Length: 357
Ligand code: GLA
Image (tube, rainbow, N blue to C red; front, side):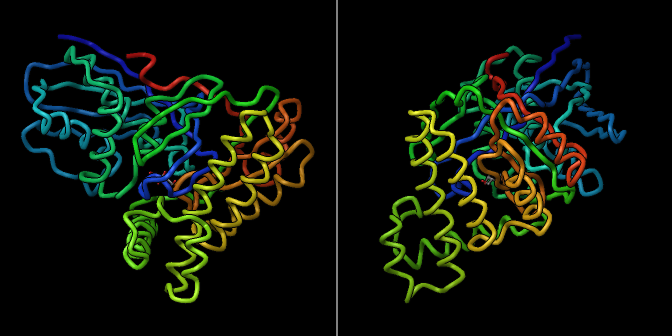
């Protein structure tokens, strides 16, 4: 009998919306909320996951892993277990419990936190060491193949590579991951719109297909290759919906590069303006905002100390991230709690899971 426990944080996406599966760039951060998977091995080939809120339990044999339709939450850890088996790791049966405080459906990647914590748990339980980028990729495959969401690598990579007080700058053309200091004296406030997003039921996969169609129509290898000027030249010929989808991605990549420059001089005002522009592009070009998210960012922008506000993550519900002067962060979170978002909070930028492996 052996016991193990592993933690992985949720993440917040600061700029670079839907760019990850378009070979683009993102600025994100691991947050101080996460999930822990704790458990003990057993003598047979059964695996059992228990969740406490809401209470639920699923048991399955390592030899009969199939996606669950009634208890979909279990597909995240089961998908990771399946990927370990496919990679040739020999696993034994176990009982595990998931606990934590990343709200589900708030755009903070509770799913990636669950996948990465499961991977860490399996590694510890079986004395395995796997390269952290390979772990992130394995968890993404679990989400693509077992859960059925064609997501990119952003969530898992940020959950693995986050660093306290630093933003993670991810480049999905080269899979390069760097950290950039978050400006001192500023803070992030996260607010849930109250409308849960569910990437499986949302238009996430449709957006991915539309981006692929735009790439094809533009004759490019990816939207990463397209400059704003090039895209503009296609305005008259490209299908208008595909044009707007592509404009979002091309604009987001450009905003990430501008923000990386602005971070060098701690120009938080510039980053806030880029966040506002990002939300506007989500609203009009990518159409992955909702009236609730729009109200939330508008309300945040009227508050003292706020530099910018946008939706974070996949969209179609979920939450927002707001850049604030640190001294006013508590007051902003408090105001948003009263007006729009009972669970709004000031988030601390935290270490990723790999720090604990
Ligand atoms: C979700 C997906 C990510 C990414 C974001 C949008 O969080 O899981 O892969 O595409 O949406 O940037």
